[in-house]
Image (cartoon, rainbow, N blue to C red; front, side, top):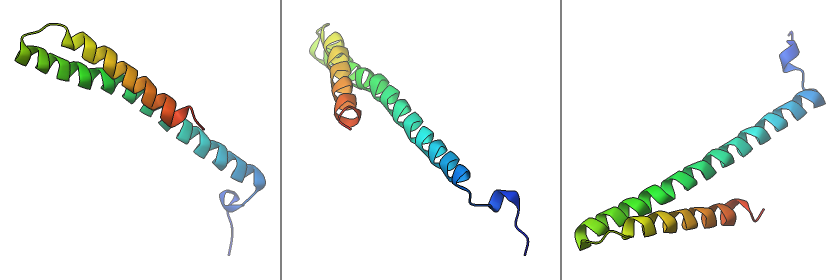
Length: 83
């Protein structure tokens, strides 16, 4: 039975795999934070726009955008800032 150089379990290979896995987790976390920052104002701004249309007002879009951004920042702080 022959082994290839890629099958050799060396500490360097294990460290490289751990580093690659860590980088992937961190990159996923960063993209999730960006998604939160975009989706919060979009969703709550959209709800504000619907409420503005239904109620005949013009200020709920801005309140929804600001509220959505505040909730997004809080969620990011709560989820990623407490580690």
